[in-house]
Image (cartoon, rainbow, N blue to C red; front, side, top):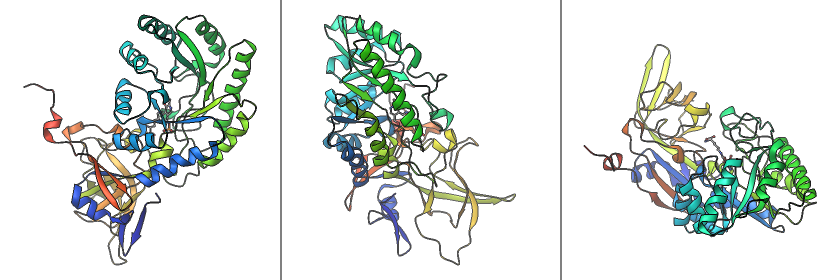
Length: 415
Ligand code: LLP
């Protein structure tokens, strides 16, 4: 969270006071730093500058059009998992030739549209999907470029809900069946095999699962070569963790350097990555206002205007996210150990447990590291309009998504 710091007791985001942003746009409010996003993206690009590569930002992490267009201008590719994401990223000005399409349940309409716009490749997750893509490509008179998403059966050592590379997970094609599935693909007239892909999970804080997965995938590349199946690219997915609390994930450059070494014997392969969180998580915050404090039965609640509808990570994954007051506490302020809770009628609606804070009604709090899987997972539960989103560009702030109105809540409904 390089763009956040206190000056004279005031919390600033890139020299703009949090209190000013809240006053200008209201709360709850998502705020992102363009500079931080650019810096993180460039951290992926720099160590790969001398190899053929494509960084396909996983747009599920934060799919605001401004974020996407910022990255498209830097030469990013994109990893999508739905037609909605495809339409978004095209709207943001992305080059279809830099889009890879992941996801286990691609529909006929989604495959058709992706073929029509000419994406780089489908990351195929099952044999049945392969046949469906072949059939639709035949109807359209096209050849579909595909890569198999292979499940390397590696323990990502992360939260079970965001672990994707184990045999019991629904994702990808089993490592044992990979060669056989490539051979079946080879026989399909409207399929062109171009790559191999894996993604083993998210918020990985150790290097070893990435390296183990790369070893297994590269062993497969050798095996495929021996069977006359040559590839153009290898996609090692996303998943690099960030620091929310005191985690110490490898840096982007340490990760890329380790994997580049593994890939050195395969100079013919273009290298793809699909990072999401590590590009945007620490580039964003959620500003929320304390509506009430409540002290009863030894419990202290800071009841704020953002809830699990705006930021579901703490409720869904027991995620710990740092909370900072917009005004630094004075030594004379009374503090309590609070549960920071939202307005939603669920006991799981807790943004942060057991935080020592000195806050009072109408104070502002900042939930840090909220740039990834924050707004993109927000909902209208309890009929709350979703927050506005603002981008900081140098010392300017710019609205990049209006706060939803009440009329937005029932758009398309009938009485
Ligand atoms: N590629 C594929 C195929 C994925 O499924 C994902 C994330 C990514 C790339 C990007 O992974 P990242 O670099 O962001 O870790 N909502 C959860 C995270 C779910 C991740 C799902 N897949 C959270 O808030 O922790």
